[in-house]
Amino acid sequence: MTALTLSTAGAATLRADVVVVGVAKSGKTLVVAPGAEAVDTAFEGRLAAVLETLGASGSEGEATKLPAPAGVKAPVVLAVGLGTAPEDGEAYGSEVLRRAAGTATRTLTGVKKAAFALPITAPEDAAAIGEGALLGAYVYTAFQDTTDAKKPLGEVALLGAKPRDKAYKAAAERALAVAEEMNRARDLVNMPPNELTPATFAAATQVAGKEHGLKVQVLDEKALAKGGYGGILGVGNGSVNPPRLVRVAYTHPKAEKTLALVGKGITYDSGGISLKPAGHNETMKCDMAGAAAVLSTVVAAARLGLEVNVTGWLALAENMPSGSATRPGDVLNMYSGKTVEVLNTDAEGRLVLADALTKASEEHPDAIVDVATLTGAMVLALGDRTFGIMANDDDYRTAIHEIAEEVGEQSWPMPLPADLRKTMDSPSADMANMGVRMGGGLVAGLFLQEFVGEGIPWAHLDIAGPAFHEGAPYGYTPKGGTGSAVRTLVKLAERTAAGEL
Image (cartoon, rainbow, N blue to C red; front, side, top):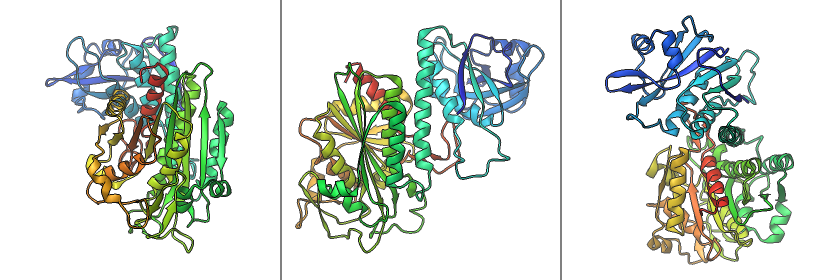
């Protein structure tokens, strides 16, 4: 993992391999962002002009390397684009800084130490740059020969971040914890499905629990059968890798509230008997991204010592076709006592979540949030970088949307139209696991709502779009698992601890 340090040294005087500066567009002019004044002085005030000569425009995602002049101890200057410069007196946005820092660390593979002289006016800026830099340095090479590969950037030194100031130290520590836990989620999502099964996911949770003082309970297939968890068992019946339900809990002695998080953990989704067509299952190892986000959030809450109890429920199963698999037309007896007719075995995530939501509700938490790569319909509606938010409480939905916006995750509030509920009526059971095709993401949310305990505020995050990035890396986002929703959930836990929700 890339190290993160705070330094009082100047941008021109710190010994490093590279000094990172920011540049932005101001009208038709390229300007050097605050924090890099000493470097610009070493260029005799002509850094922007030199960069323009090299073709730099200041656009977000742009990175330009050039030799450092005399007077700068680092031999190389890396200029990263910040987009449009803010109006006088305004600061650069946190997400702008986060993405710029990520662009820098992605560019600096093989470098031992880089000094980041990006604009810092408050601890929040330092946190954003630190997060972005650590996330941008992420690589997944567990199953590759890395003998000749360049290593990620070794150390990020944040300049202007006041290392003796408690607020800045706390910001750096938080950035480190959040980034490392996002990277934990990324690792889990990127693991091949023959390595990450429900049992090995549960075992990884136990290891994390032991390391961070969390209480972990694992229900195996025998315990699930004895307990009547028909949804989880119904999805896992077709696989040689049996399902698990994992409870991982962080408790704080001064906590006054409990937040329950429920994650969809389909370690591989073939679609079951309703088999996915070719071209739609190559990335289905990512269908456990919700459970990965939940585990990472619980660990982050423990690392940050938040004064709130956070309980994670990981509903783990592998959805495979076989002679023992659930068939379209089968009726499952859910943990809640409801019966569900399975019309499509590829609508399996809602079935495992339903059992976990019911179980989580039995503990009467102050709120429940489930996270899932649930529907392709949500991707069609919002694209591949934005997750949808549904809830049984409009204010709670709005609060989570605002939190996501604050931490730099794209989200959008979605409705739960009551008229769509009747489309899940079944002649054979209390309800079906499918309704009308149009608005399928909303239908899935309505299904889940049926299994939330009465009077408990609940929200559903459908992260099917942003959980796995198939394109080229950008900013701090890599190809593959992204760690989507972790930042939102950690901030939600912090707000809950502060009594704001």
